Image (tube, rainbow, N blue to C red):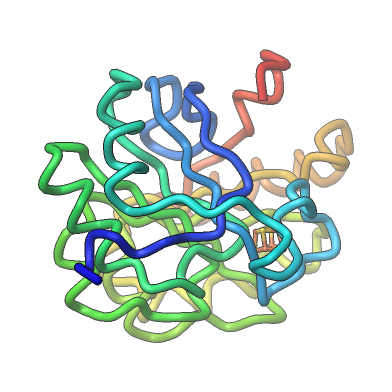
Length: 211
Ligand code: SF4
């Protein structure tokens, strides 16, 4: 079997608008892979948990064709935890089709240099309870922290030393806490105090009720 025919467990693919990070507001084609080894308590995509057999399977070439046909500015490879899978054939197929590749990952698994050389943008969302691989921290273009408690804020600084390539470090309120004025105020003050690369973030797409 040629590498481009690699099959992936897929939860869903859809055209939408990127709601987080520096590409917020751009049209994007999302490829959500199945399976997650991280299992955050506040996860909003628990339908991505499970075994391979719980999901449909699509090939790298088919996913690249869908991405190209969507007309989106780029494809977002997300999960679940997409790095549980061999991403090289998918990235290669997307790259051959001329589709820009944005990876969203917790960073606990490094997909390897052969895959990452095709990746145009990497968003790393590190969890305090599941430390990302050092290689992922080093190559991430942006970090995104989901903040659920005031006490977490100072702990995030520990990731920044290794994340030398990250131009943006987003603090997003955990969605169920988005109206918690104490938490939002603390996040606001944290960014005021620390400055760049910290940024206040939001899950824009959820306000539009599209996805
Ligand atoms: S890493 Fe992502 S998909 Fe996995 S549990 Fe956390 S939020 Fe959910």
